[in-house]
Length: 137
Ligand code: DQA
Image 1 (cartoon, helix red, strand yellow):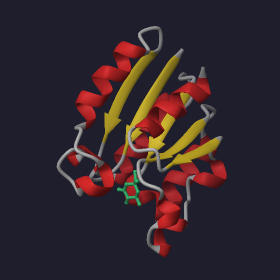
Image 2: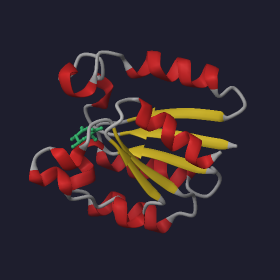
Image 3: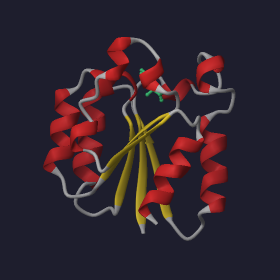
């Protein structure tokens, strides 16, 4: 089973960025543990702060991977282009958020990912990624 986690803008700062919202663990450390725990899964990781690079990655994996776990960060709330990319590929996408976006500012209640996603997981910290992974198994 081939699964990729794609993280969008500012998620490279996890562990340092607004730790009261996003926690104090870096994604690299979390990802190492996740790979160990799910050793049978071919799990890969991509992060970019650039919208077009996220779209290119979705196109690249979107016909030969079994699942995409996507935290598009703030692009979730703005990017029709990422929404269209998900519509255009075959691989199912699970939208993930570390924080509960629905308990935050109004602009975070809008998602251009969700209408084209298989499901949405938000508010469980980094465990949101693990729950998304479980949904593919
Ligand atoms: C986020 C929520 C977004 O609103 C925010 O812009 C992020 C992170 C989350 O994981 O909780 O960058 O996607």
